[in-house]
Image 1 (cartoon, rainbow, N blue to C red):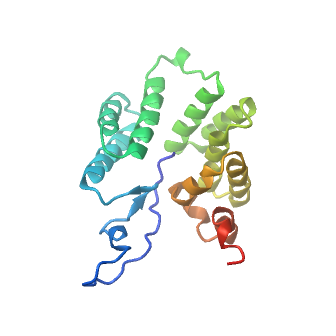
Image 2 (image 1 turned 60 degrees about the horizontal axis):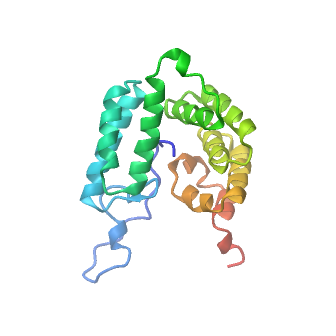
Image 3 (image 1 turned 45 degrees about the horizontal axis):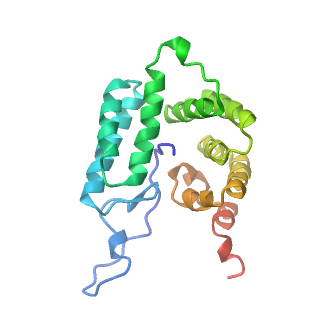
Length: 204
């Protein structure tokens, strides 16, 4: 959802073997995953490169150029990257509007602004927008999920876990998304995070 600045740990490098390995595709030279996208396809790697370059410009608040680059990402093979690119294009289009048109009114507009502020590292503004979005749509799981990610990025573990649990209760698929979301790297060593994301391990 949100561009993460830390890489999630890979599953570890295994020694080369003459026998084919089930896990061999998951051990490239670079981290095997980036927010759930497996970096084993050269076409996906190229798509990711364009995406990263576009976001670097996006974070400098130069929106016209990254918008053009993000449109190239949409044509790539990874649906997840294409979805992320579309989200950032919407944000870029919003940010390029005249100031009087940037005042969000709907819960989705507040959410989009909150995500944009998160990507720029402007935590207070991000929280203000996401809190407003949540008040307007308290059952919108993607807003609560974004708040959980923001809590984690700002080091608020208890609040992050509480919001993530609510997001999962609202939409169980968020559990699987969070497993590969680098925004939650801060919680990787917290046993409560593991219990929340891998409930099937309880009693195993």
